[in-house]
Amino acid sequence: MAVDPLQPEALPATLAGTRPKGEQLRAVLEQLIALLGPGALLPSERMLAARYELARMTVRKELDRLVAEGAAYRVHGRGTFVADQRIVYVNPLTSFTQEIRAKGMTPGATVRSQAVLAADDGLAARLERSPGTPVVRIERVRTANGEPIALEWAHLPSDDFPGLERMRLADRSLLELLRERFGVAPAKAAQRVSAVALTAEEAGLLGTGEGRPAFFFRRTTRRASGRVIEYTRSLYRGDRYEIEMRQETS
Amino acid sequence: MAVDPLQPEALPATLAGTRPKGEQLRAVLEQLIALLGPGALLPSERMLAARYELARMTVRKELDRLVAEGAAYRVHGRGTFVADQRIVYVNPLTSFTQEIRAKGMTPGATVRSQAVLAADDGLAARLERSPGTPVVRIERVRTANGEPIALEWAHLPSDDFPGLERMRLADRSLLELLRERFGVAPAKAAQRVSAVALTAEEAGLLGTGEGRPAFFFRRTTRRASGRVIEYTRSLYRGDRYEIEMRQETS
View (cartoon, one colour):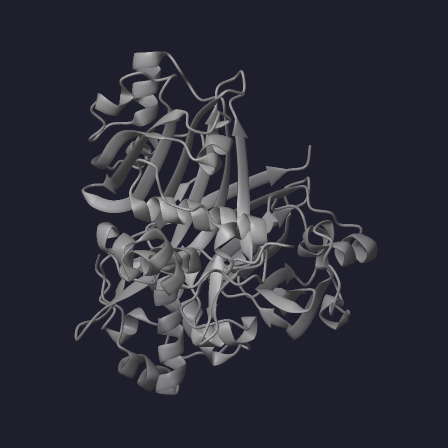
């Protein structure tokens, strides 16, 4: 990439539009981000303020916004850099492993716990089983190219998947394993998604900061017959993930 | 509601399951939240720690998690309360006004700005028009029962909607207005959703705190012909909104 953002010629000479200056600066920065790509250094607050005759506060506000949206990140004492593009999530029936592979990255998983427990009322209701039914609970950290992206807590009725609590789930797809070992494939999925702040513990496991935004998914997948396969909660880093939704009138 | 959470009889006597104590406490608290409903006071950290013989840190961690997920909120010096249920968002073709009405609430909108501007390269590309094309930009705060829920920045090609910059958009649906005045209805929508942290300015407009989590939507809606109707960015409070996604194999 021949463009050096610190060379003023890479930037428009002036802000001349009819929109507020802050918004024009934002558009300039967004174009620069698209042009430079992940890891590139953005021009400094001081340099942008001088070039466009803006108050430092105005420049800082727009840089803050890019950081808050996850388009850029700051390194103390070094400046503001273009963030990696987010991984785009489209279909709740696609496994994490498939999604990450489709993006040309290497999926991974670290198992934090894998055990059978008795379902309490809430979990039993979600799995559409009786309270006390044995459930395999699998807690994993999911990675893409070795970087932690998501925390996942899967719950599956033990009677339907005997021995699952002893099967190897490091660096492999749970859905693939269910298909290969039990001949079960998901046909329907429903999920709720919230925007949440990470607790200190969650942030530590995901290699990011306490209070940072994340998606919190609660997903139920079912067989074609309607029988529940799994109820899974997961937390996805907001700076590494985004969701795509499409809709047409029928 | 006859249940007083401060009466110990409203709670299970002991934590007796096989799951870690913290998780069992979480399940108890989730059931209590569902039972008590929005605005109810939850038992204190001290009381929960004493009743279940847990370390205060364990109790605090689970209460922190409920607050981080938006299921509860704290009032300094008064305690932890059950949060309002989130509004569930399903379909990008449904207008904010329709959604809020469907929930039995009163939708509202405050117009912060409404003007024609010349599209820069990025906006022109999103609207599939030439750079410099005149665009009506409408910035609104959206409310439900008077409470700010979302900030919205809509962009529509001015040539397609002459005079739109002067039409009244306070407390009414933009999509309804487009249908009534211009005979235009959306047939397709595509959107990207990120989980972001609110800047101080955004949080101020939404009546919440800086750094709190929010959904950031970028939506393009089109006519049946494929022609772009609008490109809209919006920020929805994470503590008031959640997304529902459903999928079936075809």
